[in-house]
Image (cartoon, rainbow, N blue to C red):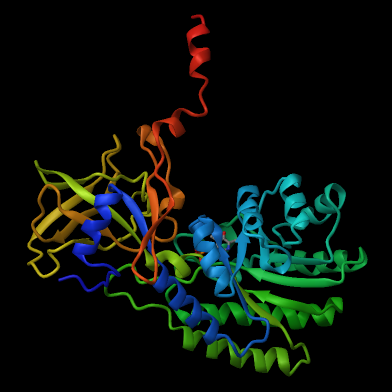
Length: 421
Ligand SMILES: *Cc1c(COP(=O)(O)O)cnc(C)c1O
């Protein structure tokens, strides 16, 4: 029996598939809003607290519009993501621009929108000054190196390409100060999909200690500590979600000890979480096309890793529900596959599931972050639609499925006729 909840019934889903053919991703507005409110409430002790949704996780402006209404800002790292912010009328300190290896025109766009600029490297201070000009407020991304363990998705901080070393931070803030910059922030992001709340308390401690030291050595006051993203979600039915209260209380205690007692408050606490905000509230809906029995038993779906690449890329677990068979014995073992000519194209390997048949509706859970977003067109696969289940039960399409015209749109097929070989 499945122990993960769905926001729709089999009947509802069948009705939806009459209008929108599978495969598609569908997002649950109620779930997104409830988690957003809980997150904000948990940190309401901190004046100015803000979550900047990492838009790369699900770059759909309709979802962002909902989260903005719940008080979230947007965390962008590319030109297109800044344009999403612009389309929504977001500007100023609603936008965090946390990029790396950044071209000048992206900095220019970010500065035009008044975004908070989070620099990834000390050399970018001069690059930014020369090409665009320095804004009033600048943030640095810190890489703690061997001082902190990473985890498998993001790797060890020492091996990670991101951020300033500890020494560079002090040097960098001094440079900014000498160049007349007046306002400062500090950021780090060292984990991905981390489920242990204590990890984030420890991250806060590292930043708070640094903020005290920066005040002493450089004489500047940091306005905000951006704790990054990386809050994990319970992909497996046995996983526990991150204990937000524990995390918030742990950070609050450190805030009192290190920030308030040193006269450095108010310090705004920011997150730029992606996965936790939408991941559990998205679902990839697919149908069984074929059951195949060779050396193993396969359930072939009408979607593929072009719709969800996490299992193939990271070996990630995504829970699977066969609609209407939730209470049947899970006495079969399947590899659940897609149709790419790529043997990695498996949503699950050796998964215990109920007996499946052609036409069964299959829901793959937790695809609301890094799901549709990571889609691609390999093997001529077209990217699916994105639907939104509204709080009143209505379903709206928030992105249509790609067509062959989209796929061939970048080719000059007329020119092909004149191309002599
Ligand atoms: C990916 C990313 C995030 C969001 O990470 P999640 O694990 O989805 O919370 C935040 N900040 C930066 C700079 C990122 O690259």
